[in-house]
Image 1 (cartoon, rainbow over the protein chains, first blue to last red):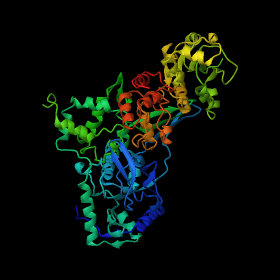
Image 2 (cartoon, rainbow over the protein chains, first blue to last red):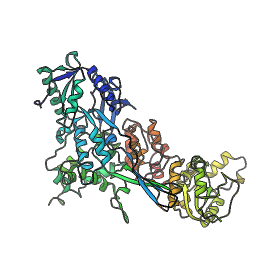
Image 3 (cartoon, one colour):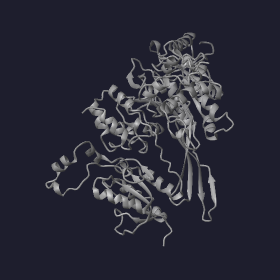
Image 4 (cartoon, one colour):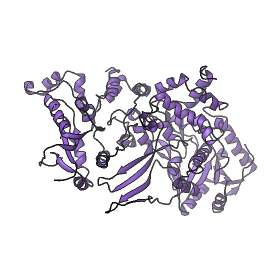
Length: 379
Length: 256
């Protein structure tokens, strides 16, 4: 902690003017806002849209809003949404095809409105999640141009976490709670002494340029220290932890562990964990044709390794049992991802724990296997 | 003679809601009539042409000896037979009779029960004849119906996923009502409605029947944890798809 803090602060009104400035520059500004008894990510126009004075109580399979004793704007943990729904939309048309009178086919790319996103309130774990999806969609041999274009244009305002949720474990994954890069601006909310301010770090030229237009003040060394202390305190208060030492080998060496059957008893194969995961990137495509067989389109949708269709190949589905599907997801996320992409696929945000309807907790599953590794598998 | 494939729409024990979904396709109806010959659809036209038919859409369940015979004739006249809706696919709400003695109902409802000739059970079409495709829902989703007909015309597989409602709920950006404390059947229910009820902050009612691999016991345990009584679970499963195997068995595991 400490170290690279830039010394500027803004007041809440400064954040309001920052949001306005981004809107003036044709950004679609998305941030935390209250809807459906939750703090979700949606369009925001200013401070009034933020969940001021609210927080969330989370546990495995449970989420509820609660009032805070202060007026913090970012005093909550990550919620049901993630930024992936904007950079990697759940449903996207890939191409259209049209058959003319002579029977000749023409294919065309769908017209996509050019959209520049500004994300307000991106947590450190979420920045790491975006970086992981970048490796999948931008940096592989088959880049996804639509993703790359949205990503390229995105302006990211990070917020360092002032509290950890009961299902958070970013400290274990080395992905937070302090944003260590990958942002244009990073804020730390300071509430002490009735002087509500945000300490601002500048992470890019675009961030520096927009700050020119926002009223700000130099930060005192006390403010810089206070910000560092807040994030340090958050790091010490993680609700969950995951021992990552040797985890890849542990999981890869325990594919027949009885624990997989135990979790299968509780798993609904509903796919919620994969939908809320900010790094899960699997998709399926649906081909549609019209009644006259003159037009067709291919639509890409978020898919889940918990469906039967996901592993359907000639002759049937490969993973028919629940334990094989849960094992596929968890071993990919925590172990095989490392072989595939060089990092874990988990950023410790805890969404899969909170938003599992039966509260299955992958940190608990991993710990159970570690506590009694299968002898048969360990060679 | 028309070269267009010939369509027939049949009604068995049902409310007509699913076949009305076809008439409800107002924007596509003329195109549909151009692409397919609507040969036998009494709900739409009294001009009924004889079979055979290339595609039969069958609504409703089998509840009378007469209908048990009639479905055999429908099958014999149909190249492809697609059931539409919960009644045809799982027996419908009227399958509640299967848990009781139908004679008691008849005696309670009709002044002259001796005129009523009905079966003891309400059963899905697949219990009587081979079915080529089952479209779920109470009622069916008209976009899915058009998808099934378009796929039939193009000779391709319909894009109708059998996974949970949760996946389309999340694709829609809804917040999970179950994690917020409201019992919901979404995790065990077949997708297709677009997660309408959770979008309006209600738990799923299971109108589309069981999803491909429902874990009923795990869902019931979670409902209990949320405060639902065994009777609540039983009642939630005793609706439009109650005679589907997973819903029936789980409903029988809970006391009144």
